[in-house]
Amino acid sequence: MHEASRILQTIWTERDTTPATTIHPPLYRGSTVLFNNYEEFCQAGRNEYPGISYGTDRLPTQRQFEEALRELEGGALCRVFPSGIHAVQTALSAFVGQGDHLLLCDNAYGPSQRFCRKILPRFGVESTLLPPDVGADILDHLRPNTRVILLESPGSLTFELQDIQAITAIARERGIVTMLDASWATPLYLKPLALGVDLSIHSVSKYIGGYSDILAGAVTVSARHAQRFADYYKDLEIYTPAEICSLALRGLHSLATRLRRHEESAITIARWLQGQPGVGEVLHPAFPEHPQHWLWRRDFSGSSGLFAFTLTREYSDVQLATAINALQLFAIGYSWGGSKSLITASRVRRNLTCRYRGKTLIRLNIGLEEPEDLLADLADGFGMLISNG
Ligand SMILES: Cc1ncc(COP(=O)(O)O)c(C=O)c1O
Image (tube, rainbow, N blue to C red; front, top):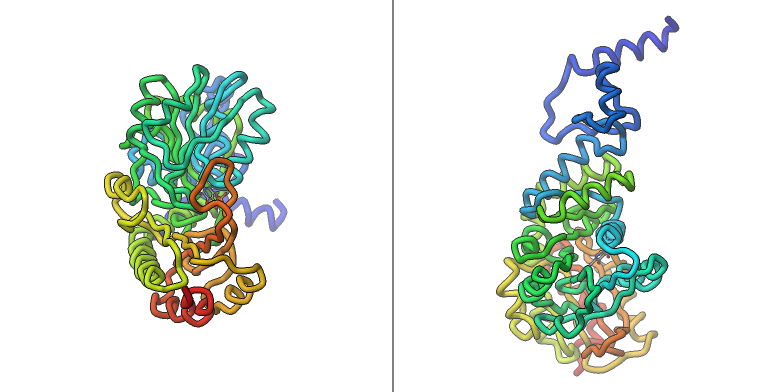
């Protein structure tokens, strides 16, 4: 045998004979998965093989993360995706078809709405928007062919909450599938399935990943819909790379600790902002002033580090740019939930009526820095906008 081939063959034959026990599970990465014998191979051909038969058949690293999240969410099945938006799109398309109608909240993540508006009509699926604070009044929006309701509570820009329990009770009676994007609350602070939701969706890129260095998504499904979703996922041959699943699994270890810090710092900073004369409204579900605070108290067990505020007057783009560019610790960027504090500012555009329409919303992702340093940064850089009423 050629020398290099011989060495590689030796490594291969001895691959499991000298295992090391690490705290974090080893990474499984591969396309081909070997069968022990020809009989197993034939079983796989007949779809009867109980083991993993291919790289897209969810290798152990992926399965470990899915299993951990499934348990946290209290679901029957969990599947992971290469991004949060991929998870949303797959969840929706698994349960709608030609002639169906779908309802989604007007505060849902922009690309989720875009998928419903631009892609689903091509497959004969019509969607209409719900008020972002919808509850039992969802009855006014149902049609005989409504098949799916997509909620996002709170919305990640304007932070309205939906009455999840009222909606799921109504949907269940009519056989309508409910889905909820719970990325803000994480699986620790909201248990959508316990509130009657059928599919709980997370952008794992946010708090679960925790460091803004991965893109991933996850869907956890109730027993009633688990088989259909498992089949759909398999038919599409979706999988998520092992490195991503491993980082997501690692993120779960520190999620509770990080989240406590995000929560405390965000509340400190939001309270301070409330006391500034130039700040209009602080949009934070854990604050009694929030219009659906009672829903947060009823359904959630904590709050995370993302909130927004308005200003008492509108400023020009140049004035906003001057203030935002002056910040030292807050970086400008979209994907929240990580250790670095972030800021975005935009004028709210909505299809339905919205109390913030046309107003500038400043959104803060409060990271893991010292809250006093973040306050000082806001007071310095942002002072000219928030200290004058
Ligand atoms: C509420 C919400 N859901 C889903 C997504 C999509 O997640 P990803 O960036 O992992 O595709 C985002 C991204 O910002 C989001 O804010």
